[in-house]
Image (cartoon, rainbow, N blue to C red; front, top):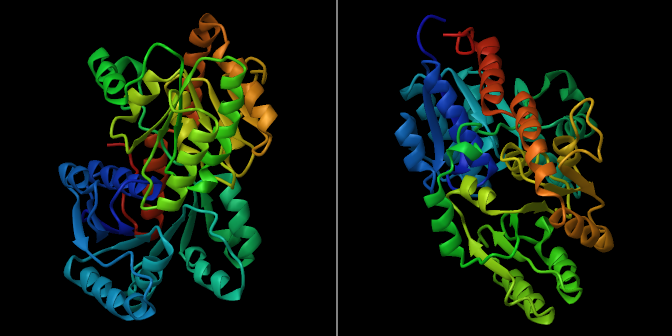
Length: 393
C-alpha cells in the first residue's frame, strides 16, 4: 500500500475511561506514522484531544443497545463512512458498536480488528453470544495475558487470532520530573488535603472497583490511631445509590475528616505525585491495570488485588525479590491483609522508596509503555492491509 492508510476506530463514546484513552492513544500513533485517524462514536471529554492530534470524530449513536440501531442504523452509518472516507481498516473496541462495525466491515470487505478491553460478564447463552463479537476480529487484541487466556477459554476457535498487546502508559506524561510544583500545589488546594499521608484510589466509582470494600479497612486503621487521607478519584457516572452507600460508610466509620470524593481528575500525573500510596482494591477481575502501571511509572508504592491482570502488572522484574519491590499483591477480599499492607506501606522508609522508584519506572517503560503499544498495534494494521505504519521513520 503506497497511500497513507485510513483507520476507523469505533467506540460507544469518546469520554473518560480506558477504552476511550486507548482509542486516542492509537489515533495519535496512526497520525504520527503518517496515517489518517477516524473515530466513530458519541462526543465526550476526549474529543478536544483527538482534534488537537489531527484526528476526526464521526458521529455515531455508539452507546445505543437497541438491536435495530445496532444491526441496522449504525451498521448502515458505518458502511457509509467506510465508503465516503475510503477506510482501509475498522477497529472496534466495545460490544454494541462492534456488532455494527462487523456488519459494515464485512459488507465493504475491509479488515476488522477488535480489542478485548473487559472481562465481560457471560451469564447465559444470549450474553455469551452478545460478547462473541469481540472475538470475531481478523485479529483479536487482548490487553493482557489474562485477557488472552479468557478469550481462548470462551472462544477456542479464535485462539490463533489472539495477540496480546498490553495497554500503554505515556511515559512522557507520567514522569515525576515533568510535574511542576505549581500543578501539585494546585491539586492539593483543590482537594483540600493537608500534611497527613495521602492515599489515592483512582477508579470510577462502582462497587467492583472496591471503594465500599476499602472504607471499613481504613476505618479500622483510623481507630488504631493512624493518620492518613484517602482520596477517591473517579466519576460516579450517575450511580446515586452507590454514592449514598459510600457516604453512609464514611459516616459509620467516622471518616469525614480523612476521606474525600473528588470526582474526575484531569491531571493524574499530579495526582500520583501528591500521593504517598496508590491502592487498587478491585473486587472483580481487571483485564489490565492501568492505574497500577501509571503509579509505578511515577515511582509510587502500589497495592493491588489478586484478580485478573493486576498481578501481571505488579509482578517484580526478573532478579528483584517481592520483598524489595514497591508493588504488592493482596488477596482482594482480605480486609486484615489490606490493613496490614496499607500500614506497612505508609511506614516504608522514604530512602528505600526513592531507590526503588527508578527501577519501577524502567520496568513500566520496558513492558507497558505507550510507544510499545502503539508500535505493536500499527504492526497488526500493517499485516492486514500492507501498510508501513510501524516502520521506523
